[in-house]
Image (cartoon, rainbow, N blue to C red; front, side, top):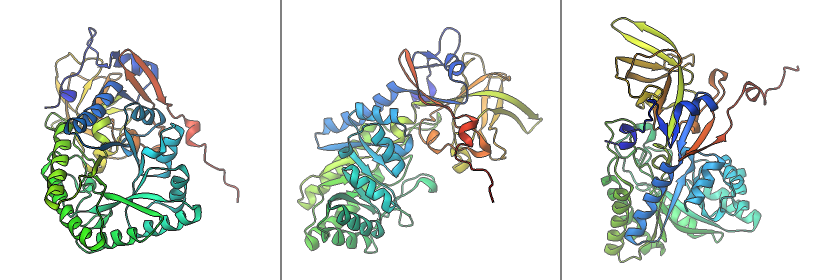
Length: 436
């Protein structure tokens, strides 16, 4: 049972606290809907991963997967905590540049990098490309030639192993849009092609099983499978990986029924498996990289909404609508993700009814939570939905021309607006009048 979901701080007024700040005061100052991040939780999660590596005594990088949540302040926070950075687009790279993040600690992932993105990353001097396919290899070789430079790369390998998770966030199986397949010859061909290009420096290999993992056995299987092929590649091509990147996807707690593992469990499993396989193959132990995103920011985020209308259908459901929904949290509509929530202004009161929390988008599928026990809810109440720090703001949209909400960082007794709320003028800023 996750303490971050099940145990929340309350003050004497019976209000939810985020850091040491009253959530009601945050909502009054910044308006709802809004994302509030507890910075102390982010720091704690980042340090837990780093500490786990330091305890096992191995060269490593912990790269924050910025697709979970990216803004300038978040990238600066990752730098403060000594993390590397995983980006998957030119926009995420640009954000890192604006945050003055050291480019040598940036890894560029993604399955369809454009020529422009590759050129921008080479000019920026990023540390590593995680190459996903032959098209990218060809573009990278061409652009290295055009710019008279070299690129460090990892090859993303699809090991044919899947974790127990939703199909939309499973990435390690054979039927995946990501990576070079291990069993049909693609991966070996990619190794050979990479080694043959003087402007490309093949540092190692990357794999990612999927997201929201609650077990370590799949990582052990993936590493064992990968090393069987590494043995062959050493003999055939003289290739010995200096880096193994085991990806991310480490699960967090969204509800009381989730039982995530501590960072230490994942790190120890990955390192033990790599050490064991390296010893079996008489290979040097590589540097080990991981890419946690959700597991660093997910539980740190809380979305605050104001309750508006209600609709009760006797013997069916009691709907309560909030001033956000699928435009700031698409996960429930996209793949049935589940959350827990409380009335932030009345957290100490007894639950009286079960409600269905509806968003305000004009879609029947815009439902955040279907069965939520709460005190008798009324218009104006403040609803706090927990563990929304990953893939909430990152996937937010302007559907129905709803402005995206603000993001606030809270650390102890201080709070700061780190992403401005959008307004109606922002919605039409790029529009052009009909002129035909």
